[in-house]
Length: 124
Image (cartoon, rainbow, N blue to C red):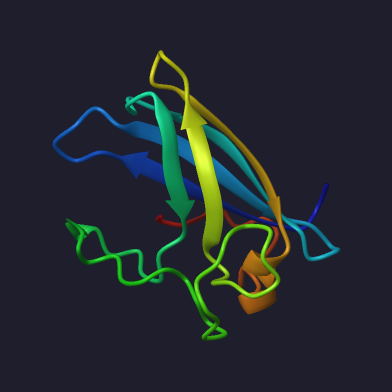
């Protein structure tokens, strides 16, 4: 696939939620998000990227949704939405969500600014 890559490591702090996600930005501007999150309650979970990677105070310090173009909030198929609005993921009865998302908006707001060989952390 080539392109740029970032990895998000997910830790749940005081709970058992954990996982990892790979963000691969291809040469056509599509960001592919792949990975697994475990320890979730079964069902739908909102999935979005926050503006900051600061997790010192849990979700309170991660800032708003990633929205560098100052767009209105929207769903993953909406033409106008935050770049970080990625819709929902579904956890099965075992609490596992397999994530597989392709998105144009993430990279429309910014490009992952690192060399292709970098493995820069990206926090959600």
